[in-house]
Length: 93
Image (cartoon, rainbow, N blue to C red; front, side, top):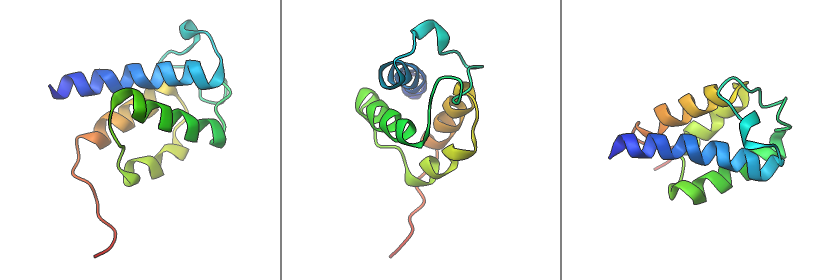
């Protein structure tokens, strides 16, 4: 079942980039750079929200914080897949 979640995240990420950025699906590969696809900070926020809806999950905040250092679709997918398997980090009482 966990493998399905990972696969769903990857698919949801690619589908969300296509929808939000208006790029053809065949241009969204693991090696595609976010900059090359037109992903800026606003688009990134829209992609994450869309992806959460598509995958039916809420991504942990500590996972989302690390996204701004990533350059490619593959790096983002790997970061999300690794982060979803970790227990959430609580900041507060």
